[in-house]
Length: 67
Image 1: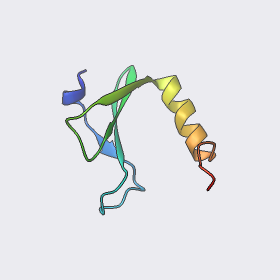
Image 2: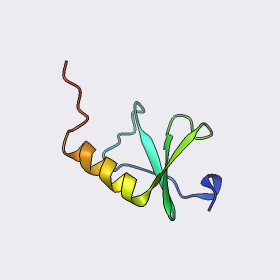
Image 3: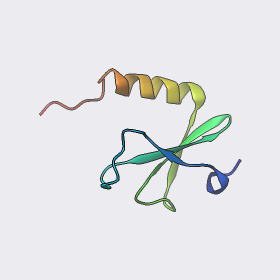
């Protein structure tokens, strides 16, 4: 499947206020990610395993920045 034919979705945690949001699409066997404010801009692609690892690490706050 091509990225332009994909069904893109935002996180259920995204608000309608704009800001820093990403959208994801299942491009089996890959997962694609794009900036919701620039849907025609660049996209990143991950294997399903890479995406699971990344989302797990985000959920466990591994990437949180300390001020």
